[in-house]
Length: 121
Length: 106
Image (tube, rainbow over all chains, first blue to last red; front, top):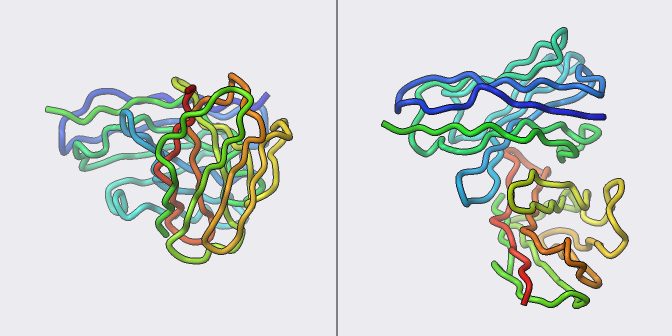
């Protein structure tokens, strides 16, 4: 069974940093592109970024709203995905989901349960 | 690419037909997916590449369209179908989602 389990969320002050993790199981993690998607409370879905797999040099893509502040990485030996978030602003408050790319199509067939990040003083 | 969904809310009764629209600000060929999200749950992939049902999705869900105009149709609403539906494009970076259509019980 495919499982994605996020952790690392919490309350952080504006300007602070946080590192989210996503532990994957039930599939060959190293084969898949992985993305982060967020959802502000009561709002819609917003794509955050992507990391490709080793054959594609682990290249990344980011939304304009987080580029230069957030960094996505992965450790295939640990079946884990990470999101390093720096210079956090109140608008970053959201539930952050890791999501598995479906057949490298650019859609998401499995999602984690999400971890809440609250940026507030 | 901006995806605009309409209507924002659709009030229907079980058994009725639901028609949801997603319009792209520029052509995205058929590179569009639909997701269903119920309260407190994560999104579920329903349709990919405009008209292909994902694994396990009931046949009452169908998608159509190409270019800039897309439709998700639920042929006969079941009680478990009342939820929020999002469209998402994979044609261009950044990936974008529509703002959602809530299908509520009338």
